[in-house]
Image 1 (cartoon, rainbow, N blue to C red):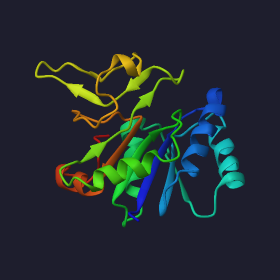
Image 2 (tube, rainbow, N blue to C red):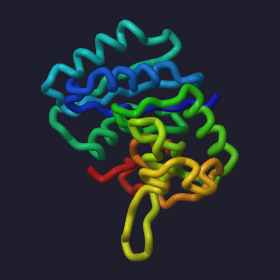
Image 3 (cartoon, rainbow, N blue to C red):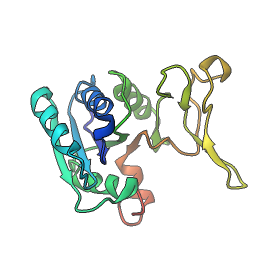
Image 4 (spheres, rainbow, N blue to C red):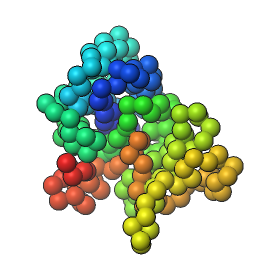
Length: 198
């Protein structure tokens, strides 16, 4: 099985800690072998990091390796994800970037990586991301136009209102809430070897 790292970014999540803990629980219980979870905390000051550490200590399955990376300041999404990237296992072939309020389906990571393994031209992908209500689409990937207009595909509508949503489609960029990226693609495309500009 290919090795994968998930970078799960936290910042002051105490006011929605139930959702954050459901999110980390869904990550810890993914149907995927040879997985590491890197929890990056962007200098939280609300006690959420301590709650998350306690939850992980009590609920982590034995097969999952968990690392904590604590930033000395809030580096935002890009800087926090770069910290996680630097902490990833050197053998990782894929890295998934995940927001701390997103709950993943058990087979999602395996299905995305299996699909990406079948096409060497793919650098990054995401699955279908639903809004909090679980019915409307939050993102089916991102698009960008020649006029520098950017947005999420099928944002805010129901599946039946978005033709072809059940099939793979090319996107300009994956949604950062849950993006899976080939490490080799970042090595080729990013001069500093990191996926984001801090």
